[in-house]
Image (cartoon, rainbow, N blue to C red):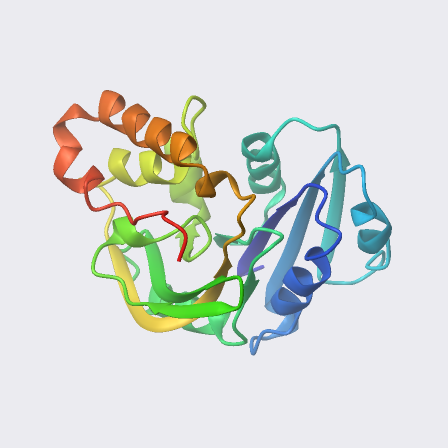
Length: 228
């Protein structure tokens, strides 16, 4: 198994099918990737939708009690069999060439730990192309990692609103990555998203500053979460 796509879902009945189908519709050999979905105790029709994928050769669905997105992401990683892993949140979606482009970059450079890409950001009918100038302008789902590297550092830690940036800060001196300058992922913002709350974002940045006082310059490069 070359790639594991990790999806965490919670009350995602309106978006989960689009996310899953974007993962299944990749221009990539079907036998070389799997989609692992951890449903975090959804109370709507998400489980009913996920049941329609029962028996699909590329999909494994895991149901659990509601423990939060961090726990769901960790569970998905423990179930992964691929040498490479990439997150996909249940309200976002991949472009058809996502897996091929990012895995190709990792294949070509065995010394790198991850490959990341540009992306589109959608909000209330608006759409913009985010051309990255720094790894800290990424979001959680546009980076493909070598699974062994994530396991070695313990993946995401508790105590952070932005555990994805904490991971990048922790590994800044030891990991190398490559930027694929192509929009391969669509990040769907919503007014009810956690990152739409200025207090959530402010707290998340403060947590990173406290944990990494020697990385204030890099923290300052983290992308803005002001609604577009």
